[in-house]
Image 1: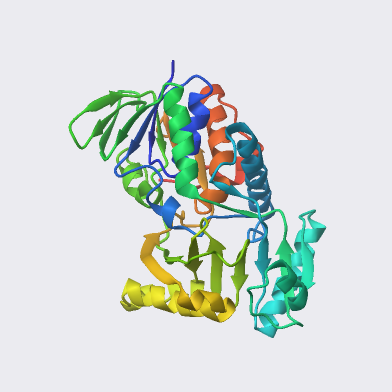
Image 2: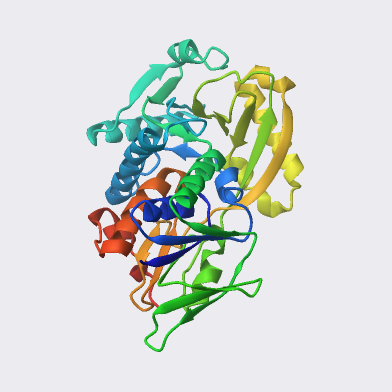
Length: 365
């Protein structure tokens, strides 16, 4: 039986481990903290392909990611994690609105479901919004948001029920290889040593450091993002949305998540995260006035796991037999499909064409 150490148990690592476990591999899930409580829990958690048009193959992979979530919900049950409520997007800038409508037309040509509404029509869908009647609002009805921590918990529980081991709260200290360079074991920071035929690097923001343990250079971007959670007596909207200057989504019955690329740009100015949270809250209150009375629960800055060229790094690294990477931004969208495809590659050697443009060997050295 193939022994696979999956290092990093956010959404990507949990999906890889779950897929491997259900197909007979002996999986060891390893995380320096608790599963699902890192970047997975502090992302906007938007399942989409509408924001992935920079390369057709990347769009296709994300469409497959959306479909994989639907299949996963059928397999494990939607419970508290799966929320396919659609996505609204609009802007207050005429030039940006033109670009928004151009992208909507491109996506429609590519067969992606998209509808263009007026602001007045959008308020029929979401009465709590403040939005001009004449605004152009794009609706992506098939998009969704995910409660990442709940999904990771479900996947880990099922993997363990299928025989997976776990080592949480312990970091990886070393990865040993044999004389042929093949992965043979993993040593943890508590001194324990685990035999492994395969290592999967799903360590998110720490992926470059983990790669160095096998003398592999994985170039990563530095791109932090700030997210705030707010509590409210009742969540006033049903869908996630990109409104002017702010991104908003539900996070359960009494909580919401806020993010803004504009406010991300203030992170490196030394601004206090609490102040960034207040700015997010203020922007959200302009769009949804009811949120003015809500309370900021926590604001956190998280490092996005993005390889240097902006695209995923998924699959085997030929120079280190037994070492695989599963490193990507948009882990919420891509986690389940990467889990399935990488499990198949590890267990059968099958390399899926969906990953052809995203192989690790494009980063030499």
